[in-house]
Image (tube, rainbow, N blue to C red; front, side, top):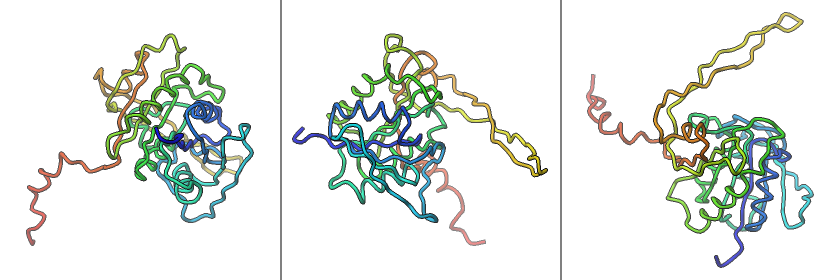
Length: 260
């Protein structure tokens, strides 16, 4: 590679989250690192952007002087937009998002701020990867996955990614020696069975908490859910062209152009 790779690091758990600190540590072994991450947790924000509120960007002191870090008051997607349009002098060679505290497998990719940041980078033509660990604990141990993160990042830098594609990487909660390997997967067909837990304040006002149960309806052994349940790292190539290409031919049989 003719120059030291420029790597943009972001997340949705906030700039102080242990997951992003682990990711920054690994990326600093590979290239020049610029961090632009939310100043507070922004989980499940999806691809939201800020248009009705003021955005703030603050440069913060990094422990490593070779790493440039900014906190942003906006969403993960805002962070990527700021980095590309305001901060970086050239397009990064790679954008990595995470490491998320909790899985972003299956349908969760739709809601994930972690993956939306990676998708936004992909839209900008930047090779991008979202990393997540199946452990929701704030003090989760990211040590077992660091070597895999480095390997995947280096391979992506060397080989590039297919056009309009980003990677969704999920790690099982296992020790490094117990991780069986890595599988290229498809997204499992699964969904959340949701309900709202209704409660009442001391003042008598109703309020609600969203709760739910994750249901995997997919019995295939080529899915991200199967990989994680069986001790493998799942890697799903994700596209941001949301056209249902298989439906175009069928829709063309409808009588949409006929006048009533």
